[in-house]
Length: 487
Image (tube, rainbow, N blue to C red; front, side, top):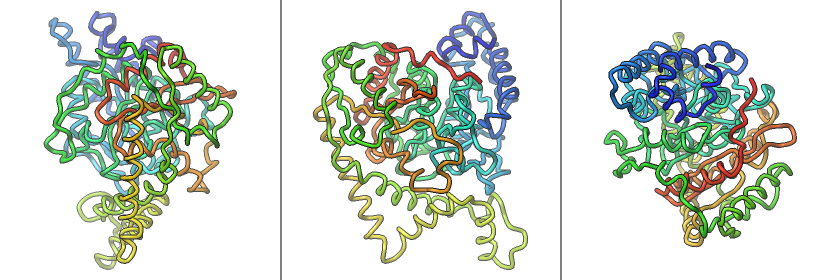
């Protein structure tokens, strides 16, 4: 059964269809794996064992009757703990929501249940998805399965670590500035952020609403493509949801990429890269050349401003979104307050962690009277300028490639005292969120310490099929994805 847990989602799905294993057996094996190793990994905030086994039983009933199974039916999945699953605790890894039980399903959760995908648990994250290392959780830190002394990346570190350690076959994360791609890079798996509006955000606890997007984690590009098919589609509950048909991305995975123009982002290869990441990047360039693609150097002249733009816009939106956590309707409430204002202050002071408080204060300042035009308005104008850079680049090339991060996973605790150093970890991922384009991180090698390196690929809005195609061709030309963390 341990060998089966290491298989891809598509392979597990076929094994269930062919009656080589039952969905219940696979789900139970996954839950047992979590119980045996998660104490040292910290990937899960809670397990949803009953829900998972109930879903798995429905899969086995269909198999017994000879009925056709939905895509990915019976394949165990971890849900980031900022997405609602009815009857489960949804905490966003914050004390303010420690005992909050979801009264409804997020749209992505509903789609998973309808496709009979067993949700085995709620994955740990940086509190309210604010962080790059998954050290900001109110409950416990997540450790990297490749080296337990290193971070898994954030904010979706629990989701990435669970897939990398075979505690789940698939997972969902949310990506606001790189929160799917960075952990995927650090944990040696595939992590994908779709076009903004491709996947419904209904039932996702909001961080920055104009940037947040839910996306898949997997160990192969094909699995990622299949999971995106399951969760994408128009949703009337989300006003930013795009009214477009769901595509079959797997059909075009193996298309020839000969003659495609692939741009190397000049600003991401000039300085600050570790020698191992630089070497992996050169290998990626050589691989694409060998596949017949034309490599072009592309400049994104304003991308250097993206960190500043992001940390004004994201904090402003988080200040607005997190105002609802006030101790009145749900969540933590201080019992010793003297009046309403005192209750607000004490409940929020006790409920939010240091990083969340820092971002709320930054965002409130940027939105305050007298500073709005200088900060928030200017950041919105600059966001447009960065987006124009991407549009200009995509008029010349089919895709852009860069490292996902300038370095591999760093030691736990090494950047917690320096927020600016932590923020710079996202320097290569933030641009895709500002522009609303799809982007993916795929395994691209290992450093001298054996830690994974990620390659980021970006394509224009609504070209996920092309993104998966370009990613799949690289994946199949190398075998990095076949190596799993030994935990």
